[in-house]
Amino acid sequence: MTQPRRRSEATYTGLRCRECGHPYEATAHHVCSEVCFGPLEVVYDMERIKARVSRAAIEAGPLSIWRYRDFLPVDHDPIDVGTGLTPLLRANRLARRLGLKRLYIKNDGVNMPTLSFKDRVVSVALTRARELGFTTVSCASTGNLANSTAAIASHAGMRCCVFIPADLEAGKVLGTLVYNPTLMAVEGNYDQVNRLCCEVANSHGWGFVNINLRPYYSEGSKTLAFEVAEQLGWRLPDHVVAPLASGSLYTKICKGFREFVEAGLVEEKPIRFSGAQAEGCSPIAQAFDAGRDFIAPVKPDTIAKSIAIGNPADGLYALDVARQSGGSITAVSDAEIVSAIKLLAETEGIFTETAGGTTIAVLKKLAESGKIHPDETTVAYITGNGLKTAEAVNDVVGAPFRIDARLDSFNQAWAKASGQTTAGTSPAT
Ligand SMILES: *Cc1c(COP(=O)(O)O)cnc(C)c1O
Ligand SMILES: [Zn+2]
Image (cartoon, rainbow, N blue to C red; front, side):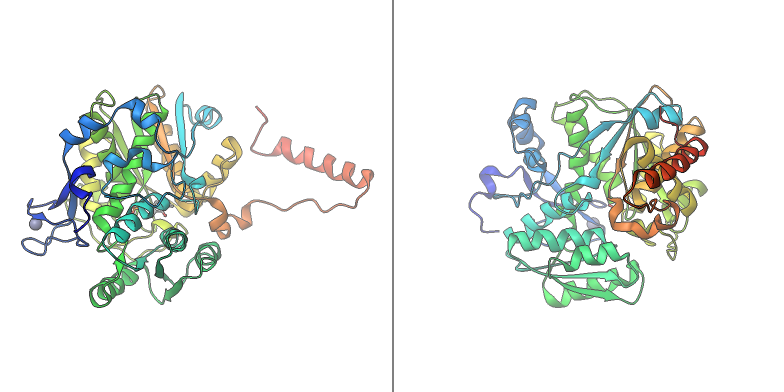
């Protein structure tokens, strides 16, 4: 902590245990090792933030997550690869299909540089890693995090070694390898990969974005809330639907909205937080359903690999958010996930990966069971891009018509296609 600008510019003051409040220096440290082994979180000086931020200043800021820099735990010039400011799309055709009136899609499937929300958390984590003097960075990943860490490490000129379960989708593996990191494909599921990485972090002194840098990393997810509030015209939504793996993103969206209220940027109002998991890996949804105050770890078995964490680090905090906000955490089947990927594509022109399919499938369930009121301003968070999980939909998207380069050949195929469309599920409305 020798950076001279830290004290004059930073709005954060250090770390603190989320459970017992014990203070820690802002180093690469994520558990309360001195007292209770609870997770550490960043502490801010909210008065300082309040004195500094305004709607106008944010609007005049960079066209990336770094326009919210006063709410993020960094000291110096951030690594800005254009992450954030993804579209918030008014989804009228999907809304009509679901019987809703004010539905928005926050589309992080087109986030930069690697087409998932993970670019947000990695931009923050690697900025902090560089400030702390790390030259090698790493992560335990379900796929998207490896893509993002490898890409942004390349941009920042950092050495990178990332760990994934060996059975990931081809697009996720390719989308890591192209940046030429060292990629370890581990025989085992994510939770086993994560355990190995904790040992490597201890023995190698690397910066692991989601282990020893986790307090900084997780703050990046707040920008998903900041952007939505700004894009809604400096207003909060009524209802949010988001996917859960570790539960970090889901809880940090809640924290982000709260900080905007505290900073006086938006007016307070109640927001319900609904969470989405895949049935094949739904430890948080199961605890919610059973009214339990503990998470029973599970062994993942689902096509939604990017959110397949069987022992979720932030599961209990996610349960609190769901319960205190009057929301819920719901699980859907792999078949429902696939249908929902197609539904979103056919109604809104957005191709999401399996995690986004999980979110839309849960949105559909909640809308159909009346748990989302039609008039609520509802935001569904799409967190990843469908081209990375082609395997999930390969068998359900049909095939092109193969025709000769002749008008009669085309006409024949077109007649057949027109017949198919009338019988299909997507009337042109
Ligand atoms: C990692 C991931 C999530 C959820 O992450 P949390 O661990 O809950 O923060 C959601 N969607 C996608 C596409 C992801 O890659
Ligand atoms: Zn503690």
